[in-house]
Length: 288
Image 1 (cartoon, helix red, strand yellow):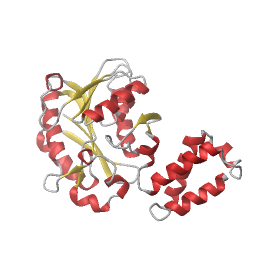
Image 2 (cartoon, one colour):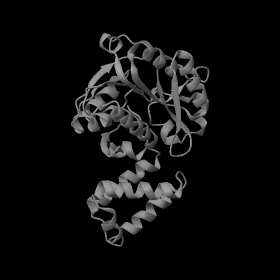
Image 3 (cartoon, one colour):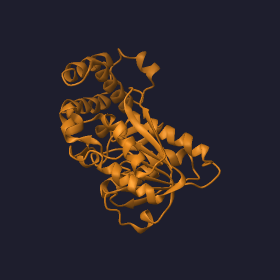
């Protein structure tokens, strides 16, 4: 089978569950991962036969994609902020909008002289560790802790820290009822979090490969308390964020103004709401 024929096979099998552009992306990412080809070289050899061992792997990937499994879980890795991260069903797949929040945080940390002074930073609900590891990679002096309630998520995050040669402090705790003394007794220069924020009623709008494979405890909140994690994080920040520090939150696009209002009522003097690349209310920076 040639690469052109393989592309057609991917299109025929996946067009009923994915948009055309997404099928093209899945096809290329699969080929790139298995065959280790640069894009320019690949385009010059699309009519060539695929090595049988590579073809077997690609057809197996196609079968799993056809069943709805996310490509990142099939490959066992995802790209985030120019770094590689191991992913599995115990952690969310890192997303581009979270990269935007990391970028905003890095700009602020540099303004706080984080490249020459040791700043204490904590990521609440770390999952794969993509947020704190990315920050540590670009701000090596930072003293960063990463918190998660899931032991499996922390195992994955530790693997990613090793993979990206970064040293972080990982803590198992629940922000809704924090008990770890180190966590609750430390003052932080930066608190950052991408907590669960998708409401149960929004499930019907989500793609099945998210619903069926990604961890629900990292995604969903009840309709009756959509901001429960933001209340908990805000209360924690009131006691544990330095007066000169900054709080960064990724948010549900439907609750931007509500989340800003929550923070202002809690005592923050400044809460800036920003949109992501898709024009959706997606992140907030707050300070005292």
